[in-house]
Length: 492
Image (cartoon, rainbow, N blue to C red; front, top):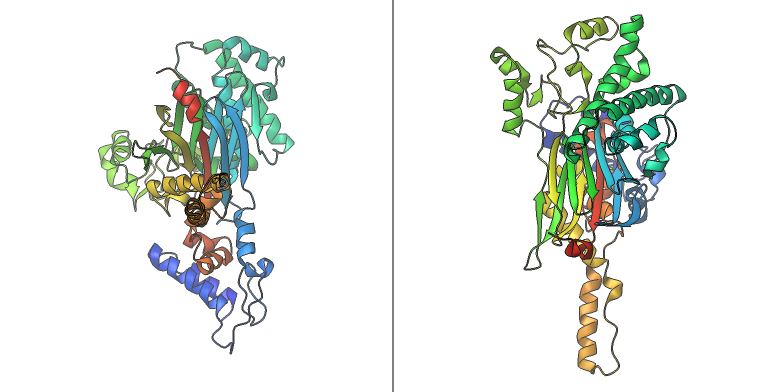
């Protein structure tokens, strides 16, 4: 049995229970690792071949170094040292090919706030990539006073003067750059005319994300409305989708916009010096009965049985809110016209759209000294661990990184004191983290942990795409660390 045959078997089992599918894929990994006809096991460690399959009967398994290289490939750390934010760390691990998750971070230069976003795409990576590159600009502009908006609109200021982006990769093709610039200019013009100084930060963030979703829809539909045709590039963005979790930290104030099933979790310390958590966001999924009731209330009673099917919206989409996914938002006549060119666009039982919204649920939290860090993760992380486990892992990681600061023997210490110090140091060294980046630390535990190298290597050896995707999802994690001393000095 070769790799192609096994892939056909796995792909043919997509309707099986998820746990059974996972076992099939892991069993396939074991089959690659231990060939039944091998008289002995010869171990040639090579990352290059571990993901490509094998052309001979030699057992191949990743070394610990190769596993670590994969896990650390795109990890990133950025010092901020501004108000409540000391620094942040993030990382990603793909399961899809290409990865459908995206992340972005930016500093607002004029409003002195920091933005962090995690975006989990579905139906392709296009929507998540576009939203990640545009959302920070829309949010930053919504927070500006009208006279600054006008300077930005007429070219006296440019985006780099109001927003500093971190770790951004890739650019839009010129055609899309021009189109997106025109949309942004229209948004700025409306902001300068309709700005309400009494509007809260939460309201401004909410309206900016809704406007971005509106613009993506308009960019895809305008060629059809004007010329009776669709633009392939903007249409691919419109028909894919993305859930999002965006955090804005301004002084001691934390604002979070959540759309879909990413999550933001606060890591906190109790008075007894124990780690605890507060999950700030609520998932927009069928596990949230309030979300189901909201959707039911927006449509005729006769549609209730058809709206939520197989724990999905119209039997198609797992998250109940998202950016993009306009085949669940556009009018019936638009989808009928689109169906003449593209197959399977119109969902069944599609009568009273829109069924989907990009409206974020907003949360506001006043940071306190007990709030040590914030974890923002795509559901690929939360599928593998609870919020409490994630917080404990990051908390223990923080303490482990302080190993090098262990007390040095003093001049007048007795031999007994030195012995106790060395014993304590030995215990502390056991807790020294393998990875200096806390996001990498979380991802390593999400795929098997530190102790079980073989299981982690097997999982990372699965071919990206259908097989790897049946074991896990793309994982994106951002961990933001707060300055307790700054928060302690902030007035209540």
